[in-house]
Length: 210
Image (cartoon, rainbow, N blue to C red; front, side):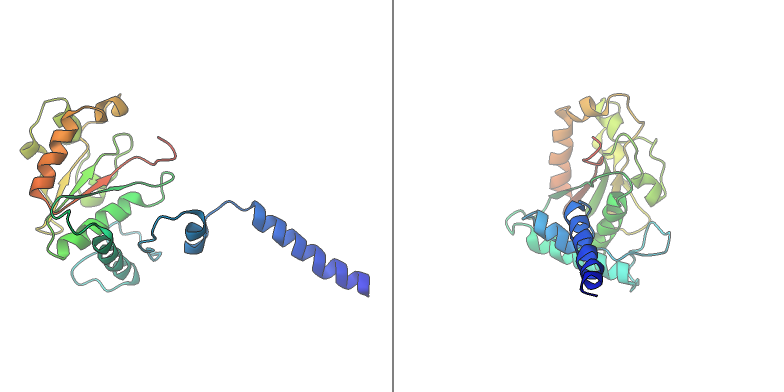
């Protein structure tokens, strides 16, 4: 009986411990807090809805409230002396993690709070932000500006989601996105946007792939 208890309790506990030590996946907020000193601004509740846009003036779902909390925490953590032109780059570990979903809905949350916000589709490899907002990524956008084929006023367009929300698409997908982004012309674009907008949200490529 002692051996049965030993094998029945000790071995399973040992296997569970080894499995936990070898587990390198992130399963919750506590794992993030253990692995990094970066502040945790919030978590977005999982929604079974396939809607890309969940944030509206009247939405009271759990995921919409998560974005409202994220908006508050983002505004709280930014330095008070920055003022207008707060620039936030949003990325993820791999494709499909939800960075575009977060960019679009956080942008709407900021616009609803009265902040003039522009979303930039800077993922020049697999752009999705335009699709989320009901636009075509191939329309005149960032690549046209960087190549000198369009001005800033030509690529900024308003959205139908909110009067304070604006959008810049990636434009035609280039064969050399990395070299194109290194262009010093991009600095001039951000300088102008920081002067005209309260918040600039940049949707980029996954950091784990590019």
